[in-house]
Length: 504
Ligand code: NAD
Image (cartoon, rainbow, N blue to C red):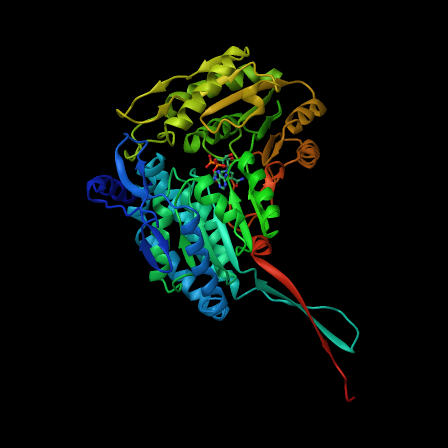
């Protein structure tokens, strides 16, 4: 972090008392209360403070938002603009996110507990970059003409799918929303977004900024509320053409059922993970492998779908690896997320904290060895904090190795045989990401091929870019976010046959 960035963060965190939040829904270009007037309290996991009441929307509010989105789509106020016009509005939208970046970052930190240095340096930047990238892309993608006989012309064109419902989780509220709304809006769709009830505030602000950027009223609507009350009516809605979901595998399965039960809307799901990180004894840089193993599981308090939560270390280097890993743990002790130096913040709420602590108990009860952490702590009174936790002696069939914890808990397993570690790595319902560390190019390629995961990292775990697809094999979901592939989710392919009676 540069000195200027630090000064800027200092100034920001002094600003929290002046921040004002608006928890009302955003429908048809306006802030509105839930139709029945109900609200729920949005509490900060930083210190338990009440941030604001938020509209507790239900089926009637979803109906109103879908109707607004449908009307906007049918009169083509957005879909009918040229790609270059949509590009300009999207780029302006990205610029406004950056211009409002400080308030957005503070809001994200207060709402879901992540350190403000990352809310600012990662979440705001990535969300703006994503929206700009899809805006930039949309007037550079071409349609196709099929290689048919001369007697006809067959055009293969992409059209927006229509009204897109988006449901997102709380761990990267702005980024998860941006990964979906950016390609959906760029392609000309109208969107109804339901943010997580645990982190609804930045999504509501994004909708205001989109309007200010020139995205017409009704095109981007945000309806906060609980999953069964607001999410289900959206997934079941007969006038929603596509539902794009990020969240747990449990709810993701219900989303596909709801799509089938209603109008067979296109359903895309980005779900959970239990990613294996395999370190061979011939790892080219043990320090880098340790840094990545520890840093990636503790980043965002372990609340990352792609966190490398199962660490397989070759038996001959395990002791050396663990010694280095344990030496890093003190640097990740939780602190006040509003403090610019904090690298691990608060768990999103009391419910998620209780889940993490339950998994830690199950690790102890099933015979894993607790090497570090394991306790709730209180760097800020009233907040939700847990120590960075490492278990050794984990077996792949233990609960903490099988199930997604979504907290800062690393399970360490050891192995001696390549085929066996690949079998163990793949023996899980998830297939989101994986990593392999070795200096042997044959082993790197062979293992990367054999791992059943949407992304495999070789000798690093940090690379990420909007240009590459993100998504999972198996029960980690269906479809891909990011990259040009994301347009596949939000467009229909149409074939138009034109008869040619050539005079020549
Ligand atoms: P969750 O499934 O509990 O909730 C996700 C969203 O679904 C929330 O907005 C919630 O309100 C809504 N929801 C809940 N029940 C619903 C229902 N019955 N009908 C419709 N909507 C409903 O997940 P979470 O706890 O918010 O997020 C954590 C999960 O998200 C983890 O499993 C994580 O791995 C996953 N995730 C995946 C990715 C990815 O790209 N693969 C990225 C981030 C998070």
